[in-house]
Length: 392
Ligand code: CMC
Image 1 (cartoon, rainbow, N blue to C red):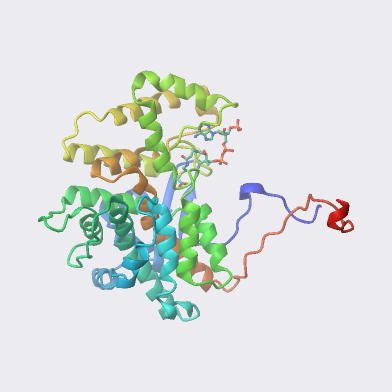
Image 2: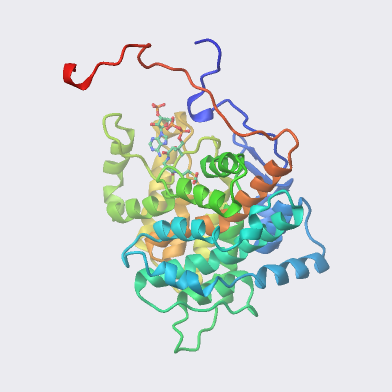
């Protein structure tokens, strides 16, 4: 059995070379193509980040205008998709609807199957970035029983998404620029995170040459789990369950108890052994959004701040280097914006789509690329004789 290195959870195996995202987990540093996440979130917008992740460089003003225009032209989905949605139970989880509808897109764009053509790869990338907000908004509208809202391409990417989610057609809807900016920043924070579970899933699926839409559906399926993108939903549910500051010690004790499966959701990270730099920006954004909406006292925010304070002074969390991650504060912000908890992971998927595609493209374009095929350490039965059913 000494033939292969056994590395469950891939804690010490690099599966690829990549030039896209750099993380220094001990220092709490995150760079997209060399640029610190703090600077991109402060000065840029999400589509600029998309361009950067895909192309490797920040766009010039002309390149940016062209990219924005091209993404905008692809926001519509085929009208048949609207009927496809009707097949889901109306109380379906939005992530179930996302996984299914992203996968279904592979049936609409046969030209995208030609992944050997760089032009087609770029068009497929544009389509996915452009259509993901439309699909996420449709998933939202469908599960609350409202009619779909058509994309309005004169709006910027994130304002258009907010409008598709919250404009009830009969009403005049005005996008709040502060909220739109805040959500855009949340998208930047989620855009890529190197070889996390969902991205590795996309790469592995793509390594067989599969349709790129189908690969992204695989990534979304992986993201859904509570240890990964599902943590934002789980973190908010946890804060609601804790309910008030007095109950925190009980939950801290549960999280530390090895016989109790409960974990502090939104805490800890495989790579960050320091404060998640995204969580810091997220916390600031939470305050901005609550201020803008005139929410003076959010009991969930009080619980979150106190929970963080207590955990960060507790030896258990200090020794294990467990800090809040991106999912700890995002839920409070998204809830204040009007998104139900069940939509949180769908928003994560929307934003991570660019990372998935950039990584997929990088893999396809890498000359050393081969089908991903891990080996195993076999621990099952040795060879034995078949017993007919009557003699078992
Ligand atoms: N609460 C309590 N204890 C924890 C927690 C937590 N949230 N996270 C880790 N630990 C303990 C764990 O019990 C283990 O203790 P011991 O060494 O005594 O057995 C130790 O810390 C190391 O944990 P691990 O599970 O071996 O670490 P991992 O790298 O395999 O898991 C993680 C990383 C993020 C899955 C985990 O920290 C976790 O489950 N956190 C809660 C879920 C969460 O917030 N996920 C979002 C991650 S960031 C965004 C994203 O990826 O989508």
